[in-house]
Length: 112
Image (tube, rainbow, N blue to C red; front, side, top):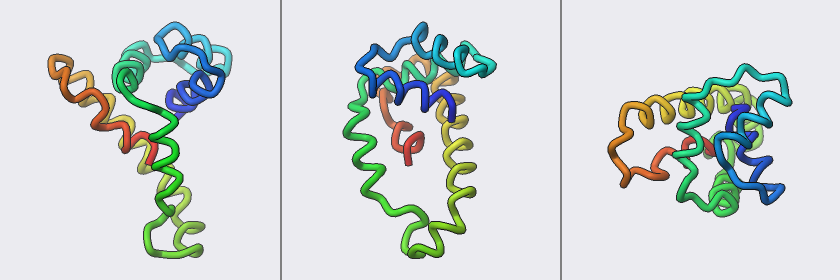
C-alpha cells in the first residue's frame, strides 16, 4: 500500500508521478523499495485520472451492504484485500508488458 500512498502524495502535491519521485518518497519514509513494483505502479497510473478514481472509490461504501457494523468489522480485511489486489495487479503488469491497451484496468482494485 505504501506505493499507492506515495503516488497519492505526489498527486496531491501536483508533482509528476514517475519512478524517481515515487522512489524518493518511499526511501524518505524508510520503506524497502522494489524497483519492479515502482515501475508497475507508474505504468498502471500512466493514463489514469487519480482525482476521478479517488472520488469513485469514496462513493462506494466499505463492506458493501453490511452497514456500519460490517464496515467496522471488515476494515482490516478490506486493507488486506486491497494489498493482495495491488500485488496481483503488479504481477499482471509485469507479466503483460506487451499489452498497451490494458493501461488502467487494475486501478480500481488499487483504490477500491
